[in-house]
Length: 164
Picture 1 (cartoon, rainbow, N blue to C red):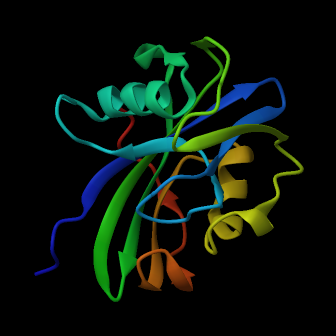
Picture 2 (cartoon, rainbow, N blue to C red; picture 1 turned 135 degrees about the horizontal axis):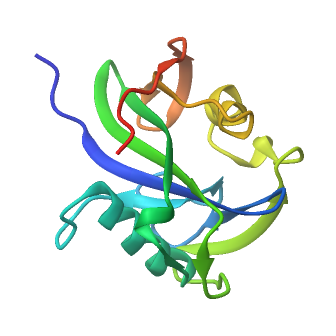
């Protein structure tokens, strides 16, 4: 039986056609120097996945997210060396308060949704990220040789049935 993956979130705040991404800095578990949405693993005191999303956005960008305004757009299970490593719940929102600021873990950058610099992101991101910008809601599995390194491939998109 496969080990149970850790649960994590990524939030993609929008201002019109622009999406907030951050360049990872400090000592992230994966992807130092790469661009990603704000987010991270569930941990106490998180009671729900949305609690995790709200906490992580405050920690990583200094912005306050209204959990009722989060729209779940994807659930991706990332595999490393054949085992599920991380189940990431992706949300979008256009409602938040505060101005994104640099923190010890992220440097905020706004990018036009049609000009996201995928070459600065993790290896698998160009394969599934555009689906979010097209408005698709999906579930898929992404496979790496090791944690976030050595992209192998991904499964086709399945409909997202978990709309919490």
